[in-house]
Image (tube, rainbow, N blue to C red; front, side):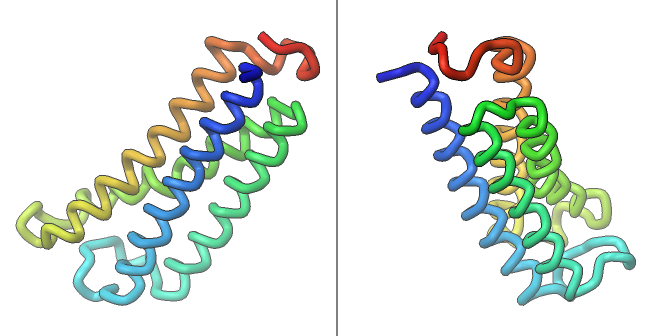
Amino acid sequence: MNPEIKRQSLLKILLAASMVATFIHFTDNYLYFERYPQPDWITLPGVYRSWIIWTVFGIAGFVLYTRGRFGLSYVCLAIYSFCGITSLGHYLYGSMSEFSAKMHFLILADGAAGFAILGFTVWSSLILREQFRNPKISA
């Protein structure tokens, strides 16, 4: 298989896993909003709106990546990665005992997915340096 296609497939898998993890966590946060320790400035409508906005960045990042527009893709993917990473911020607003096992699992899965997207972005940009290659030539 072409290495370019392999990298696109890897990104697709990571994004799909991240979107599922963030969807489940953000839905749980929305449904049980009062149970999640979080700052006062986070609102119920803000939970689902932020998921939609971040997800658009993830989809745009993937489309740009597959079209060889790596620089813009990396920006979108890095922004999207914070959809999951910022979920770990719940731990800044409550003690560990305030979270149910389900909450811990969803927050940690969301955070791990966000770090996976950020890791892919760093790997692609700094190690593979894809933005400096001709996208039509496989590595």
